[in-house]
Amino acid sequence: YKAYLEDQKFVEKAKNAIKATVTEVSDSEIQDFYDRTLESQGNTFGQYPEQYEQAMIYGDYITYNVEGYRRIKQILIGYTDEDKGKLDEQIGNEEGYQAALQTAQENIRAEAEDVLSQVKSGADFDGLITTYNDDPGISSFPDGYYVSADSAIWDPVFITAAMALAKVGDTSELVATNYGYHILKYASDVTPGAIPLNQIDKEKSREATLADKKEEFLKAEVERWESIAKIERFYDKL
Image (tube, rainbow, N blue to C red; front, side, top):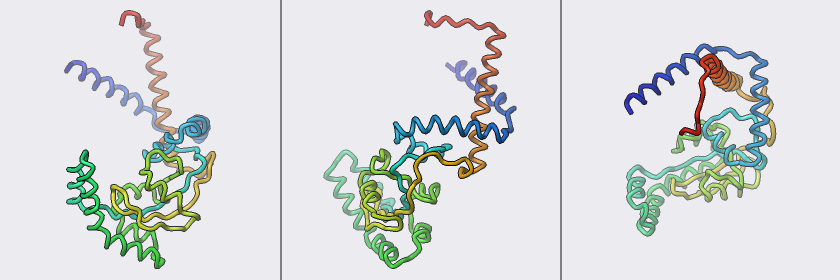
């Protein structure tokens, strides 16, 4: 097994060395990769919107938006570390968990109501996010999370509250979940369909195209070596 691991390390090192020889992409290559990605994502995301959401969360190269999504900003007033620990201890014990959850909510209720009051008084929502928000993920989505009525990755309570907001600019009351109290803002609608290439971050387009070019180059090199070595595979012997 140790020998196998050493072999795998060598193979991975060799692959990286080969891919490292590819360092540049042209504008035409970026356009070609965009076109291919758009065709693929248009088909896939349309059928499986959960893959669209996962791609968004992981920061993938996105060329196509699914219909029915809106951007939701939030301020999360999270439970204290002590209460989080007590909640974890009660997992599997529904009665105990609900009791711990009620206590956790009571302990942050005053702060949450104070922030909500500031929101209703017209305070800058983004400024309140900076000051009070306990959700580190929102920093990767400064324009808001992508949410739809059919979202698969968000808490159902969060989805219901987000979709209940009638128009852009509306904010919610306190929304209680297992994470704390949320205050949501309907930031904007997501325009469905193809995202024009010139609206996608140039560096992200370049990086995605370069990564694809590296993989294609490696694949071509492996196929070339195999043809030279005349490798035979006997899958029926496995």
